[in-house]
Each structure stands twice: as structure tokens, then as C-alpha cells.
Amino acid sequence: MFAEVSLEYLAEVRRVVSAHVDELEADLDRAKHALQRARRDSDQLERQVASLESLLELASARQASSASQGMTLHEAMAHVLRAAPLGMFRAADLAAEINRKHLYRMRDGRPVEPQQIHARVGQYPHRFVREGTFIKLADSPRNESAWGG
Image (tube, rainbow, N blue to C red; front, side):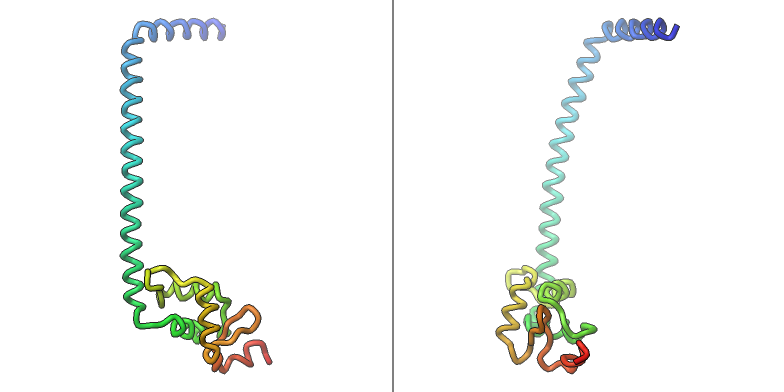
């Protein structure tokens, strides 16, 4: 009984579809064109969003840069190291903290990179010392107590 109903139902659907092929083809054509327009609009909106995000990022970098223009990188490093619980950071973590706090940006607005931290440590041996992979202030009272020594 179920198979007979299904076959009858399919035959009726075919008859209705056959009677309206032209309308269905026109609807399909309209739907395809609407989909193409929506994709074009979506692509255009994605480009617009990316452009606006870039502009806002540029403004944010400029604000961070102008806010930190008075502080040099080695001053920013010292500021972060003084506030650190153990008074030490690895170069990558020190750079990340300086960037997070917007303490210093390069002249072109880019964030601080770990290799810049390493370079400053080498340029200012009277201000910074290395202890293994960590960087500390040379004059820090925590230099001896940080490791219990």
C-alpha cells in the first residue's frame, strides 16, 4: 500500500512540475541572479569591512604611538621590569607586555619585537642583565633574591 501511494504521489508531483516548467525555470533563473548579486554584495562588504578595520587599526597605532612618544624602549623595558613580580621577563614576554600596555611603538607604528629587546639589553649593559633566558634590571634589589641566591 505504501509503495502504491508513493508512486501515485510522485506521478502527481511530476504532472504538476511538467505543467509549470516555464515558471519553475524562470524562478530558478531569478534565484541564481539574486544569489550572484548577494555574493557580489558580500564580497564588496567584506572589502569595505577590511578597509575600515585597517583604517581603525592605523588610527589605533597612531594613538598608541603618540601616547608613547615620550618613553624610549629601554625606559619602557625598565618600567615593565620594575612592576614584574620577580623583576624579570623573557624577551618575547617583555615585548608582549610593552605592546599590551602601549608603552612604546616603533616610529612606523609597528609593535615592539623580541629582537629589539635583545638589542637594547646589549646596548645598555649598565641597565639590564641577562640571567639565562631572562632579562632583569641591573640595579634591581631583586637580582639576588629572585632565585633565592
